[in-house]
Image (cartoon, rainbow, N blue to C red):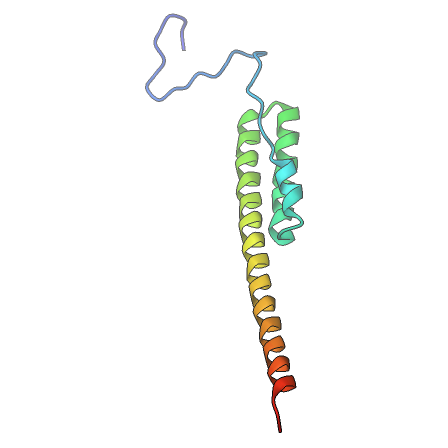
Length: 112
């Protein structure tokens, strides 16, 4: 492209070389926290967050943004599934123990 000519349609010009970029959030903290909720999906989140940090260090901001979105997706899935899993487990075990107590209580108070 020659100086003074308008850019072609659809062309996006980035910031000049050496200009500071917006910081990219790697979501590493969220990914590490998700380990305690649902580790099978938190591991890909941690790996994507690591790729994001490496891409930022290499100056690849588009790659860093893509890895950041990937880490966010995996961390969000791990969080949602983990919370649902824990709530469901508490309900199942709570109802099971409640039913067991009721059966034990009725057996203790019945007369033969």
